[in-house]
Image (cartoon, rainbow, N blue to C red; front, side, top):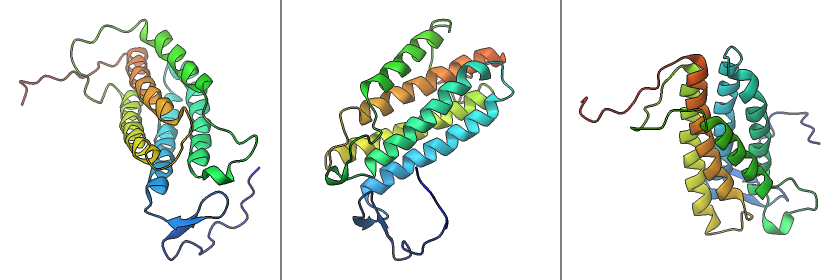
Length: 191
């Protein structure tokens, strides 16, 4: 496991950071931007978790979000590891992670009303945080697609982020329903 004794090291003061294996790269490189956005997404999911603590939907969604936060940390480590420095047993995103998200999407979407318009972010605190997480996830996905043109991200990194953003959308709708909150709908003429 990781052991952190000192929070600051001063090694990044000149604008570089080290990848897994020690290779130095600029802090604004696409790889760093990509896994930094996963870190941002994970922080937003922390807001989701906190907001779910008082929600009727919390008991169903809290274990899912806790699992996803760990998966995102694993994906960040996967993206921080150049091909030459990958090691046996390194946690990576696999098809089973995507399958789990798809099963949860299908289960929770089943009881939701059909969409007749786009949804505006809202529908209570938990739903709003899910929508924020979804938008950060979409940005992470776009960055991962760009990064995948330069380096091998593994078979499932981009697909996982794509499915996760879908899941966050459904989770936001589902928790709004559980909370008894109306979902604000896009009304194009209301401008």
